[in-house]
Image 1: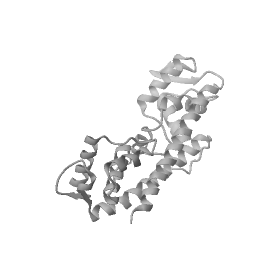
Image 2: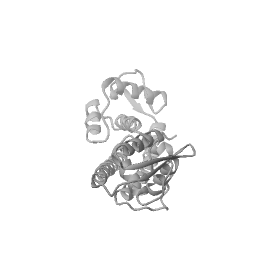
Image 3: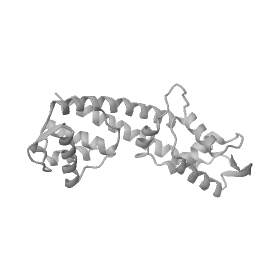
Image 4: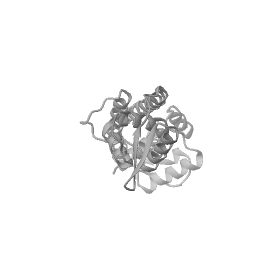
Length: 232
C-alpha cells in the first residue's frame, strides 16, 4: 500500500512514526516544526489523522483520542513506514533532479517528465506566477509564434514540468498585457510571439523560486531519511 506524495500525507506518516517511537504530542509537533516546508497539525487534526491510521489498521487503539500514547503501531503500520518512505524518497529525488536542472537551465531529455499527479505535489511548493514568465521567455524568444497548447508542450519538453492550463493562460494574458508577448489571431486561433529583449527581473524571480523549492525538497528528503534511519 502506497499513498500519494503530499504535505498532509507526509504529516500523517510522521504521526505514524510518532506512534512507533512513542513520542508525545508535543514532541511530534516539535519534529514537524523543524521542517519549513510542512506545518504541524492542530489538536483536532491530529486526532482525525490518528483515527484514520486506526481505520487503515496501521495503528490499534481502545479509545479514539488525540493522544499518541493511546495508540500502538501494528505490523502492517511498521511495514507501511518503510515502504512509503522508500517510495516517496524515490519520487522526491526525481523532483529534486528536475529542479536542479531547471535552476541551471540544463535541458536533459533523458530525465522522465513529471506526471500530472507529481506536478500537483510540486504545485504545493512552487509559485508558478514567479517562474512561468521566464520559462515562456526562455522557450519563445527568437522563435516562431505559438498557440497556447504549443507553448505548454515546449515548456514541458524543456523543463520536464509545467503548470496547469488555467495558470498558463493567466500568465500568457499577463505577459501580453505587459507587452512581453504579441498576439495575432488567425483562423480562430490565438498565436503568441515573444516581443522583448531579455528581462533580468523575470530570471531573478524564476531563479529565486526554483532555488527555494530545491532547498525545501532537499530538507524534506533529509527529514524522511532521518526518520527512516530511526525505525527499528
